[in-house]
Image (cartoon, rainbow, N blue to C red; front, side, top):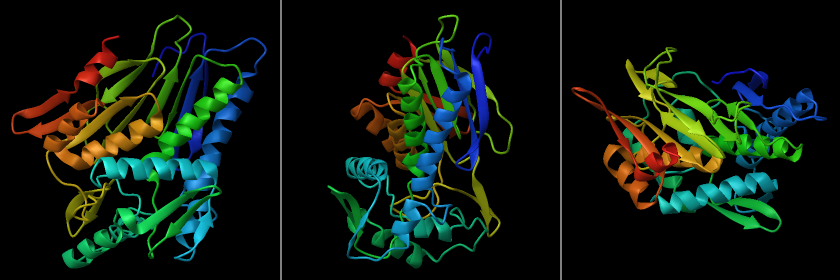
Length: 319
């Protein structure tokens, strides 16, 4: 990811994937303590919002009753409020109430491949998991489910966790660092030599091959990428993407291979990358231009890959 001379590197696993951090050491601040602070912040979000942990606050809500408010941590309320705002702004392209449908397609906590759901069943479930299927209360933080839905915060939680880790590191007096968790990245300040932190952008190719086609410099900026080339399932002999289209209730298919978003916060970058990927190769770029989103689209065409870089993306990468 970067030249590691004169910087401290920590790495490990959390939230079901790899994480790592580079930071420029600060006199009087233990590098090990900085790494531990970042990791603890990541673990705290996982404890609250993972749908792979039976003891998480999210699963407590999913297993809880309908028609009554269930208290939730402030951070979880923040993430859900952000999701609700983006859901309405995007016409439902982001929907955190599709957990049951995600499970049925074999991408949830039970990763066993399943048979393709019947179209009528799929559409009905998508309709039941519409925008109005839950309500939020701010004081004290709580959520009320109007129906038997399963919430899934995967489109925002990892990005939010990276933001929390960054805040924890800053609180310890460290201002020059980069944190990555499962591909979500945020960077503040600069490397030890004064240059920006650099991140490689990968071609969306299936399998474990990682081919970098470009690099971006990050300074007080986050980056997130969404695509269907890594997490796929074989259902009835057909490979399908893990991203469920909230409108059709089926995995996304089409010519849009991936979307990369730059934003001041990793949670917003995470959410917007999902939204733009769901909207597709025509409506996605339009949404990005209309809402000043810094986005890079990679689109499959007969003659090869085509790039679309929004004006905001060009502006942020030319600094």
